[in-house]
Image (cartoon, rainbow, N blue to C red; front, side, top):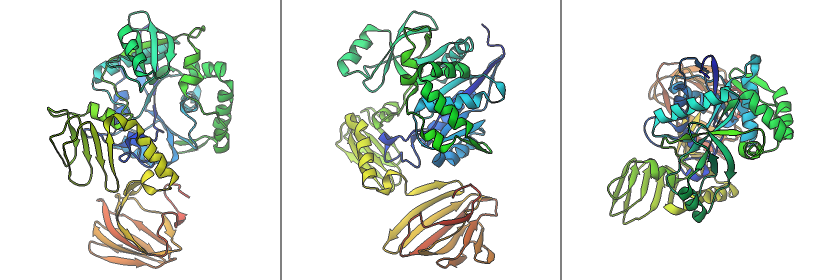
Length: 481
């Protein structure tokens, strides 16, 4: 079959939390939005790779993103930085794993009577051979256009225990999937590598929207029905599409593999596999990041302002200051403005235990960086103490914060650069560099940037309670409550 008139809908799963890459990855700014190497984030790299799928006879739509409410503006901002716009952003009110997420994407893709080939990838993976990646996906698209469920299998180069495996049979460009295998122990992984015919399961699927929905209805009709109910209760706000909250909360949580893929071998619903040898890595832990970074003669990798001496096979990632390491072997050191991680490289999967403890203790380092991104810009909490907090705030040109008030704090604003439009009670004033104003406790106020360059201010808060939840919003451009 030729690729004549094939409609392709890229689908990027962007709802992960990336807990094993803490402290760089946080709940409010997870790993898919991080720049771990080069100039673009993992999410941006994923979107750019999919944009190159187009060839003669194949029409590739703008990407369809599945994520969550908290990250919706990160998605839009990062796509616009690479001059892309999404076809839609599907916002899950609660996490329900990948099978419901893919079902939402399939239902959205069928709007208007279409039935495109869905190319489904995660937003937090890397490849080093872009041409090989594109070639493999194009082969998978051709198979999927003929009605096949197609999965990409990674050619293993080591006995990896952190991935599930696919056992495939046959030869040529499309192998038949015989079995899905759970993550093995080391001895079993070594046998897989020696035997051949086993591939890493990268969680990349290519299939028509209708094919996925029919397979789900066959193997998990409960998930299919619950997703359709949530979809029927959806609400749309420009590019954002929100399924019914209560209805989606009732959807069973399940992965694509458990819900459908693992049930297909041995039935009349075969799965085809296209082999992918493109330097793939899912960056699931700091060990994986060390693997993909450039290294010195002793196997050391470093990012940022780092000095490493008399050390071997060590990663030092510095974010906000000089970090030096002496006499370390097989160690991970990651520094941010508010936290430092030191770990044995072989134990990097266990970083998630630290994140879990931070969550149990309700510590802010689990969710947010000191520098917090917002749809209007960002703020950096540069100092705090009893009854005071100091923030550096940047507002994008043309953007504004919500019209708001606080019950427990007053604020002083000093303009560092740019022009500020300040609503302070009944007054609206313009402030230039080095000018300031005072917002009394309980006063309705708003900060806006009417200029064409970023606005930066220093905010000094004082009061009995300085938490972010002491905000009463009256008007908000971004639909926040």
